[in-house]
Amino acid sequence: MFSTIYFALSSGLAQKNRLPAYAAAMLDGASERGYCLVDDVLERPSHKLDDADVARLVAVADASLLLGYDQDAEEMYRRAQKTIVGDDDRLRIMSCRNTGWQLMMRDRYAATAKCFARIVQDEAASPAEVLEALIASAMVQHQVGRQRDADDALLQAAELADMHEEPGWRLAIALLAREFDVQLRIRTATTLSDHAFWSSAHVTRAQSASDRADVTRKLTETTVLMSPMPALLAQRHEYLEQLAALARGERIAAAPLFDAVSRPQHFRGAGQAFLAKLDIVLAGLAGGLDDVADSVLAKISRSEADIGTRRCNFDYLYCVSKIAVWRGNPTEALKLYASYASEALRCLRSETPGLGAIQSPASRALPADDVSARLPAKYRRAYRYIIENLDRADLNTREIASQIDVTERALQIAFKRSIGMSPGGLIRKLRLEGIRNDLLNDERMQGSIFDTASRWGVKSRSALAKGYRREFKESPSETMHR
Image (cartoon, rainbow, N blue to C red; front, side, top):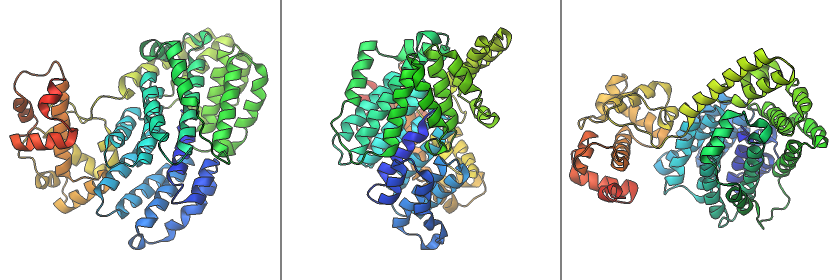
């Protein structure tokens, strides 16, 4: 996955007004320099941090995440959220944003999608926050083979970017659209017809070739100018053009690609050097240059190979199986291909973004969603208890706190700092989402709207009507009769 490139661009663009020097470093692809420009905030005691320091803490965390220091990043994100007092909207959006990028780096795509979807749907989110969320959402949808949804997210982002004062957003969107085009052309090439994951995704989710080309043209054709052009944008564009040339069988493109991946400053942190090598291997295979693919695969170190076998990175398993065939080892190739197919299927089943964060009351398993990921480990037990008892109208904060042996105040503070809402607010939101999902389900149990609400623990008609309209901008009956 190529997430760190676009994460760096998003971080730089988001901080351009508040931290211009940091933003310039990130847009140049200099994550270490960006970190050094804002790490002075780490020397300040927590009780002396003010609102202006929040941006610096988030910037330090972003740079840390890009450089592969995941635990440091998580701690800085928590410090930033802890510093925000009295602004639930800002805290809620920041929590989704920070957790979303961390989950993206861990290949937890379903929960990532939910984090960023919440920002897109949040009326309190700024245009820049929505733009960043749409870019991240498009990346997730592409990674799990839902290209039509990825394109829709990018089209929505482009429309918003055209009205935004910062031209960099539109250029980043155009670059990502080109990225999608190149990556799809490689993975659906005739020579890779046995790449089952991408072949099946291409057949079931993709538009026609002409529609796809039209979408790419709309997204990449832009008159927006940015001077000077950020180095990260220029480098990635050149890299993509060379990758596309290699996939067309142009052997001459191999040398500059080899040179690019040998420069660590271009591919720092989160396994980016490994993923770049994997891109070249796939492009070589797509272009019929198996010897090029073999030589690049041989350059992948043991530690990089460990990254290659982590969850959802089935492209690596596919590549090693293809090279095993080319090397004349069909038995090993079959074994590797079986591992690839198993992992691809597991990813399709578990990581394809779902439609909602909550299951029906009949299922009491804890949903693998973003809310759980955003809470500290101890308080995830409280969240589990909420899920298991959501249909009880008498469920209250005191009872939840007692289940994990903390005070009500401690529970309130932990939830506020982590997800931007109180336990009571979360309960109301989850119930309303559950009611809405049931009303939209053609196979829901028979009965009135209030019967459905009662099954989710809502016993007041007025509370249902007011809360539902406030949350979804329509009445329950309007939802049901869509």
